Image (cartoon, rainbow, N blue to C red; front, side, top):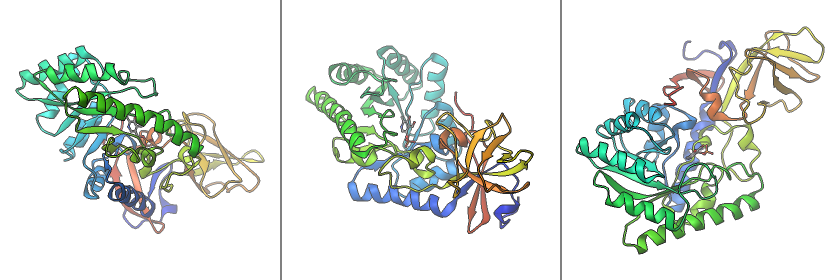
Length: 361
Ligand SMILES: Cc1ncc(COP(=O)(O)O)c(C=O)c1O
């Protein structure tokens, strides 16, 4: 595809980035960081792109968070070598070796929630002659990974601190269960409780004589709330804010705009009241519900198979007509595409690879 191509001529389905909205979203998080003093380490799981990561770093991010080791490897290969935080536990000898190999060529920190895993990583780091930076992951209510707050987290921190191949740097306490709580008052109250647990755990560890340099938490829906706990909380790791999605659009008080869509075409108009488009489960994720139709609240979308979607409404586009869909979940939709088509003023400006697409190992 040629730069300058009018959007209407792009082949479909295509993942579109509204560059102006995207740039404003990046600027908003950078402003937040300046205003509050809270550092940002944006999560790459939403964009999977070293190019986007570079823009985030250029705007003052202190590093980039990655959900998987494979994602981190792609970012490092793409030149992002500072401040990489792997926010999921890396377990097993083979993965441990890969992590250490990565730490030999980039600044890498990893989370742990288990003493044996920590010992295994320490041994691998020692064999390679380095010390690996580690955050103890604390379960502050998500009930996913993480050791319990308070004494269990402090005990693990001390264990990490004693291991010769590791350097205890602090805590991660992510609140994934709260990002999508729509009501701002409820989200604030629940997030405050989680942040209190996290900051209390920090204090307990410090009272045992161990310095805590990093307390990393929060995402798009909770970063403003977590910032009230600065300096107990040192950094936040929002991901979805770069694009937003139809789910986040319903969450009260998220100061970002929709900047990602999937461009689709009508491929069949054989039944009254419905238009079939060329985007089904393989083009639009539905784990967070159905996508919505951008600018057309009168139309609804439902998947109609792997390759098809059903648009219903009264005023439907003709055969060959185009629509823009707003993904219900940006992360899982981005992972379905090889490239972003970046658009400004109705024309294609750039194409960026989704470099870490599928890098889930
Ligand atoms: C550990 C961790 N941090 C940060 C995020 C980013 O969250 P969001 O995309 O809601 O900003 C996620 C998302 O799942 C996550 O798992």
